[in-house]
Amino acid sequence: MSLSSWSYLLAFLPATVLAYALCPRRARWAVVLAASYCFLWLSSGWLVLYVALATLVTYGSALWVQGVFRRGEQAAPADETRRQARERRRATKRRARRVMLVGVLADLAVLVALKYGGMLASSLDALRGALGMQPLFGGASAVAMPLGISFYTLMCMGYVIDVYRGKYEACRNLGTVATFVAFFPHLTEGPIGTFDALAPQLRAGRVARGRALTRATYLILWGLFKKLVVADRLNPLVGEVFANHASYQGLVVVLAAVLYTVQLYADFSGVVDVARGSAELMGVSLASNFRQPFFSHDVNEFWRRWHMTLGAWLKEYVFFPVSLSGATRRVTTWAHAHLKGNAARVASTLLALLAVWSACGIWHGASWKYLVYGLYYFALVFLGMLLEPVFARLASALGQDRRAPLWRGVAVARTCLLVVVGMTLFRADTLADFGQMVASVFAGAGLGPLASGELFAHGCDLLDLGVALAGAAVMLAFDVLQRRPGGVSGLVLDHGIPLRWAAGVGLLCAVVVFGAYGVGYSPVASIYAGF
Image (cartoon, rainbow, N blue to C red; front, side, top):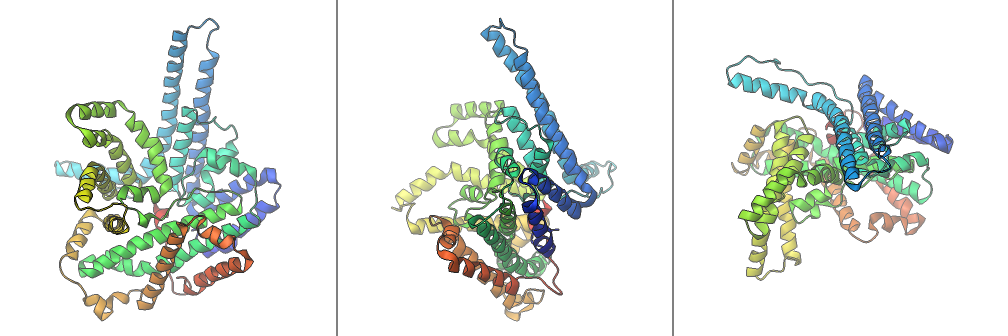
């Protein structure tokens, strides 16, 4: 069951919110927990046991870590010297760190086994075959995964690490931890939340009323508009070109790459908006995951605005630890001894950036293609940082102000081009397919399928494309207005009931009239739900 399905929107969500509102406030968290496990069962069946296992491991590991610290403090003798106290605390922290690693690696091991086991097995067999050896696994098939495993695993790991770091104490209420892990709105596609931000809200038992209820409803309708009117209408055309890329070239491939980028943004951000609206109906505010990413001036800024909660997680739990590691200190020492200025500074971030972008890439899927996808952005970010002084001198030599509208517009266009290339790699079935598609762009104009209308005979005709592009224009206008103080929410909610009703009814009508659904229509699975 997806968040954009009518079974969710017209049955599951209303029933859950009604039961939540009628239940005594102190027990509302239990309604959310029961609904979350029901949602998981309807989506994944018996695989819900993996979520329960992850919850128990996370809950126990956090309490164990905290217990190690407490026993270390209780073991302090009355006549302890400062030196002895330092040694005792170091020993306690080492023991706690080992316990933390056990919990984190246990959560990670399940993710690796279920999501990456097939990829690793096939890669090992391929290597053995190249060496003239017999395969060990014989084409192991993919293993079924519970819904949202890539998202809730990161949240579980972050919780245990935060307890180890002393950010907050481990929670002794198993129900609270279980609700945090399995909370159904953010389970399928995020946003990736933190325990200290979500747990108090989940226990508070608030119900959306007045302005909060209106905002939650708008978020759901706006998310459905992006998903059903834009993303799902573009899916047949995009799917046709990527599935049969050998039959297309030139502008058709470029068009498909651009449309897929639009589709992915509309799909992912749309479902996240439905998730945020669903959560706000129960008084829970989820983190924003996008902030007008296509207005970014470089790739690094794009990723600070795109899938923001994943970026924040990687920064907190990958970038900073690697930056403080012994290996990074050795690279930094070498860089300052052999390099100068900006090059030395950038080189000191090499390992941390490599770790972040490798993790970002492989997190997206069990294929070496996704690792290359991450390394593509690593190369762009690293080279952008390294060449920044060159760009600054070039602008100065040309007498250009880099803050001028023209220069900034060129920077935005360049960033969008690089992102479209990255998204083409992300969508292509294999690295070979991606290479062939890039080569086909320069093989000719490829206007035949467009001129003859052949391209529009696969489930997305010119009318469908026009509706989707009009919807994309509305999305662009929305992002422009979001840059104003107060954003679109303030613009609508602060200007009286008539405007609120007009906006709400307009969105509802757009979804009902122009949404891609109904008889003969195959529902399109949310793209990021597969990760």
